[in-house]
Length: 305
Image 1 (cartoon, rainbow, N blue to C red):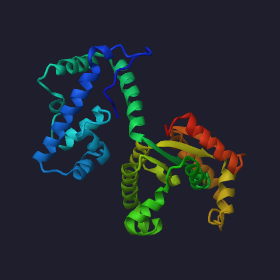
Image 2: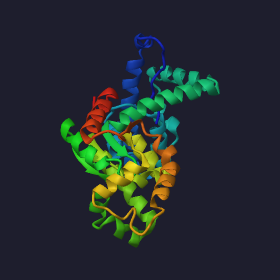
Image 3: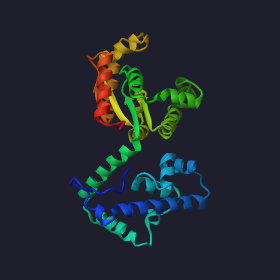
Image 4: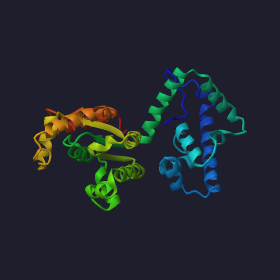
């Protein structure tokens, strides 16, 4: 998602003295008023607007109260959901609007390379804002997501959740029953709903996701946009050993090719897992060592700052 932020390689923003802060504050108030007005005109609740636009209710609340950062991409979603032109939300007859018009005109004149650089940097900034102080651990079964996640959450004084348990609570049944009753598509829909619910309810949280969360591109994109993600890596041997140490014999029971299947699954998902913001290889480490490295990584990345 993109924020209205200017890019500069200098240590200070040379545009601060040119009224950009004032323009930003004015624009926030203007958009807040227009979104509230448009939603009222069509008698649409904030929850329905969130569902239609794919924008969280928390962001809509911030938008309508002129708080937080303005995202062009999210504004476009809101405008489309309300059957409006984006220009209507940005348009203003007051003098300050001339500055915004100038900024938009400069962007329109930029070549594709410069636009791509601007969008990439703004996307990174917006992602950081949207992720708040939420962390999600991803990886295959046996990576240590639940164990390390719970221990790290306790050390960092943040709540710990497991996405699958949130899905089960929402559905009122076990994951296996959900898939048996609603199929994979129904499970993915509940998984997305649970992701949205957790991100709406928690600004500070440590969460562990099931290994298959990367299997659906839309769900995984949603996760990456709302959480700082850490891929807990391990060798196939360690994955298998840890699962069995937990008392789960299913990976090997009656299946001599289980190890090869696990290696193939790890290979297939490696590219997706690598999209995580950070990685931690826990192979060869004790539980205490893995925990200390995870805590250090979170601190170095400022995920909770």
